[in-house]
Length: 359
Image (cartoon, rainbow, N blue to C red; front, side, top):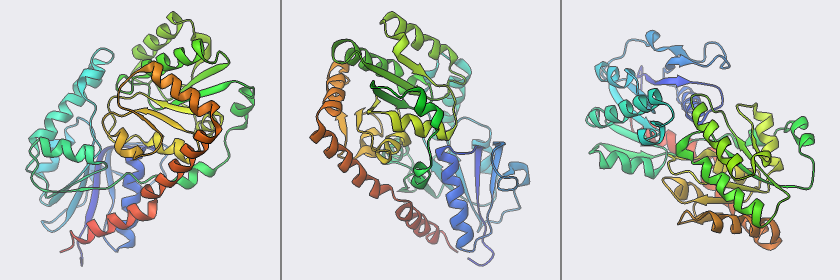
């Protein structure tokens, strides 16, 4: 290890998102282990402390014994330029949204993701190790022909942050007797918020009219999809009961979790899906369509739907909100599931991976 550098590179790092939290965790552990390290990115969020991350142009000179951990998550020229670095290369794969979801709403985003997936296929012989944050992501690499060693390392989630105080104004604003359904995640077509709205329609219309749906997340870049969702809710006659929050502060997100009676996920493409675990931490029972990595993240807890039947989903929401014994059991089981994703466990696994790279 003497003198060996292990540095990280990624296209974008911002405050608070899963990929960025992963990179910051890895940076801390690498420093604790005594490595010369650093994080280098093309785009650096303004909310990150100054000096924590540097521009990729400031990447230090690397030797063939050094290691770059490259976070692969989108289309960028960085995917290809990593090949020219004279060092060992390890991928951290976070998955890339297939273009078919994005094309009707944002052609530029679709092209970017498609470029990333093409780069992923083209670089299959470049890495000596690939770290995927779910087995679903790992299997994608194997299907593309990756033959190097692969490991599954869950995204580290700072669960202690969810014990902070929620935004009081938001809590007061919705302080009534209505039943609140919730989904948290970017407004994006792969997350299928239209099916969350459809589930809510059945619940609100045929089971409990004293109910409301919160769709929490930014629509940046997907304004056309957001407009379609609003039009769909209006067509169903439930527009006034569907709340789009847009991009909000973390304390406000905590408030919506606190207000929620059930979390509904109908996403069709997730490489991990952190909000499922956030809901579990906040003691909100989950109903989710078992697609992509959703089932893997949930394990055998919550309500996993093998078929996307919105009426069935609405009935499960009703059961979770009206059957106290079922609700308590689901919440208790969900809390146990969080042990699998404990930061200490994930960090120890990462240390073992790093030790295997030592020279």
